[in-house]
Length: 326
Image 1: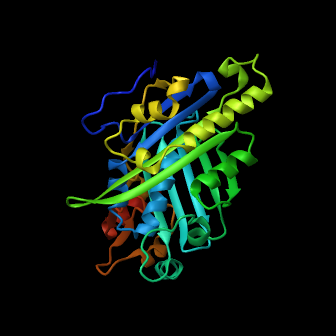
Image 2: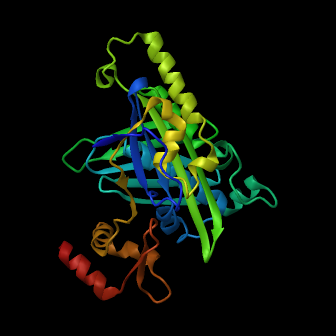
């Protein structure tokens, strides 16, 4: 199902189309794209961890990038984006299931982070990737279950931003020309903070899919450059404006190309951890090796890094787990 944006949507009440992806297509340019905007999902995931702003904003950008890349693929399973490095932020992990469950977490060194930011600074600086991640890599993984081969793409962290790093991946792979723009911001609100993050992606379509076999290469290149220029013209204020509907933003950017919009897909903050999963993990470890996990009460405590849920086990619980493994 698709609709063609012939005119500007009406102004008025704040937009309710956040936490979803809005796919679109520019038939006149032979380009497809998507607009991903996240808000409440980020609030649920990030704020429960209490990350410093300099860690939280890169995580917000990583999650909106993950959602953008994942929804551009056809898969049935889990898409994972992982960024690792030797800098203050050691690891960012975020994943998205095909039914829209998004989650993410970060690991960082507080002392290294303070040194990297300098006195009085809290937010990640512009072009933060080299400073906060150092030397590292960006990995994309698609896992469709135990009976299918897992796909993974890995590239070095090259570039000042996560969008730059994603461009490196597309340049080094056999993917079609792709352009991505990402913005994220946390603002004070009643009772805490409110996150907004957005990603805009355009991708050149194969000639056959675009129905442009008769278009010469020079024209295709000119059309592609136009699509990238129009995408790049989106301002951070527009991308993150909670009162600006996504359909209206696309109209502002691409109205001359009459963008066709497709059915949006929603996201939800939902972790896949469970006591049964933790049981299986503990069962794979020798019981005597669990002593290092015991808290002051003598119980074994396991905390999910994604959602911070803590699972506690006393000796009777452990007896049950290891009896079932016998």
